[in-house]
Image (cartoon, rainbow, N blue to C red; front, top):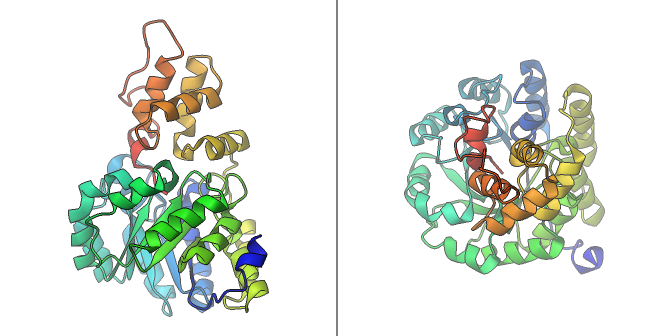
Length: 361
């Protein structure tokens, strides 16, 4: 049992990273109110949370790939962070497909202390130069292995060959909310053999995010993510106030769970969160599909008159690693004998389909 096996272990070296103002942007359709942001940042500044991530959920300059622009652009995020987060480091998320290295350099100059670069494991090798150059531009660069569970653990470790030791750490990312505790333990322990700093970022499709985060700590992760009230993409993330509370029960009140609980209630009361499709979230967690694909799946399933779960399962069978846009089109084609209406272009799906293969963790 988890409680018996390790929750009494020392947690004093663990960092909780708050990504409410990055992951939470999905939940409000990238439309944060500046007053809310400033108030929350000022309170996080006085909290015991060691570091804070802000900005567009998909990443710096996601608009360049067709994503909806946030209500706060990255220059304004810098201004808000610099005026409020005077006691702790702040960072942003990046993806090589659209985040320019010169933008990382500019954000660092403007006060950004860390950047997290999101890549699916099978794409790491293609972007080693980007990672290496990023480490020259920003003091702390973390590699976030998006959709970690889609790649067998032994293959994933091999895909990290060539990653510079200058990278500050490597994150195991449960993008689908599909991992069980045994999965988390295996992936974190394997990555820990190669990199001294390992992080974990969990989603809550199956209600496992908090437990999985604690298992990650027991497996050797020293940086773990959470959001206030668990707000985030789809079913959300591990609730940082709950993580702080669990650590308090198992060791000591390292992160002031009471203050975080108050901030979580502030977020609950002041964030106009978009309702999730619970059916799709559970299907995605069990089958292993990123929630960014759910609108496309629903549309394709309706067009070929099949159940979304069947379409998801077919796409996973077709996929080489994690299911991508082309796999869903191919799966839809398999459900009809008529000439296919589906193409691999995004012209029939103007509301973000062009971005589907670049969705974040």
